[in-house]
Image (cartoon, helix red, strand yellow):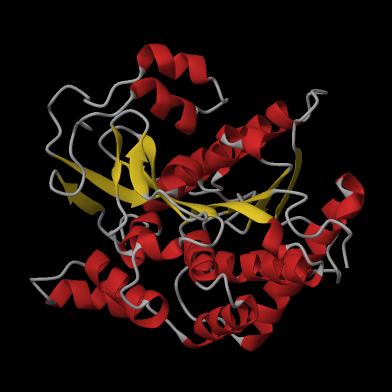
Length: 370
């Protein structure tokens, strides 16, 4: 049991994308933190795609974490939605594949709950990508008293207490081109925010490097009047690890932990030279570049010898440093990153591997946590 219990140490936890595999990997992180008495120390969750599935479910059931972890594991073991939602959207003219995805999440996990129902748990960011601006778009909720809102730093923020959790998670995990984007018309997300205090909003939101002064000079809530709606796709297109909210809110946190269960880039001695293979490889390279830049940003803002700076711990599924059993990293990395059910053996592997990696980083960089 850690000596750091209660509210003494505030943890910000970023949960990457990567389908059900990533959700199961993050489940292992939850279990390790629970075993150390640190789960209740989570003050902020920043979630992307598969991480949003795990993070939103835990946050919604914050008052009974033991049951939440068991129920989440059972869900990942029993449910497959990738094929059913894809086919359902093809043959139903009144419902898109994304609608089917959101309905599936709602039926099995969220049961008509809205962002308002996340109060009482940690502050949570469910992150997607705004195709209209190229920015991260976040559904933000939780904490003792909210507030709940959705926002793009360039277009502004609006109240979102009645927005369904299932649709926020679906937007975050709408991997293109399998799932179409989530469209928000002006009745849900107006172009401007009447009565919004710009400087106050900028201070709350921060920016990529916490440079609040930049936003004080450049903040605006109308991008020129051209957009009548926004379209939201998988948060991994912008930041697959959800590092941005941790960096912008680092002054309110003591530890930043990044759990990366996404798909690592693999060397390919026989890389494709044309067609879809080359396109797929190109996307993989771009995603790996974004991943590397996010880790570099995290290191840049936490390694400076400044009093009050949080400690940062991060680990990726392909890391062999700290694996409990030889070969765990390779085996875990070979599990697909889709939304298909996982076997009991796969769940045990992912959970064990994530917990071991977190423990190894704590031992090295934050031994006071246990």
